[in-house]
Length: 265
Image (tube, rainbow, N blue to C red; front, side):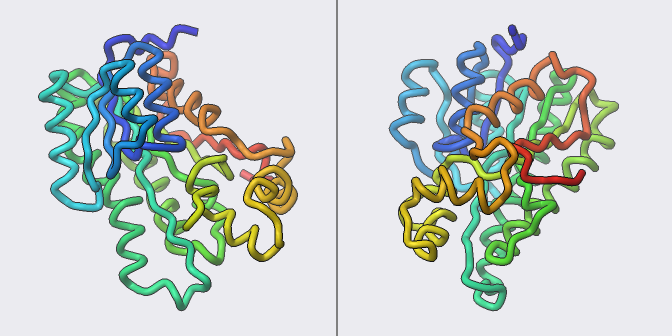
């Protein structure tokens, strides 16, 4: 299916790995002019830059000034923005609620919520001058299904989902669509990273490997209907559709991609 994204300028945050990288790759393959933001440039992101001419911006979006810098870089490189994908996030699992101090809550909210708020605030005037566009926010099923070890992460994602719905109402008259995708467990470094991935705690407690956690324990624990976790590109494909003119009359929606983890709406 042609998504009609050729030559559209698309900004993707948190694009160095996982879902963000898959989104950036998919947009580039569709012919979009991609601008990425991340704190580091991974080999995979460098490969995307070299293969498709993506504009790679090194930015920590927890810094208030980074949002304007990112949007300015996109405008300087391509003259505007048509698509914004807000994916940058941090999880910081804690042993328990008391262990997550104010600084931990600030770090999570500064990136997961306020990073998106700031980038979107900087991008909206640019999108408006192009006659509109699409914003897709990457939230999580934890917005609806909070977990004990990631209370601050879950809360930040719930706030993000709420902001997306409100923005869809406000920006609709300007031709800007705002939608949300809410993945369940996805095979990304957020789960599988050696030092701080979610799966490490599961693996340590169960005495099994991270691969066994992802392939067996997680699907069983979360009662995944399909029997497996999602892959980054499966989430990215939904993001690409929502970002495209093929979804021209879809706004204010929240698409869950979890293999059937959530059993109620």
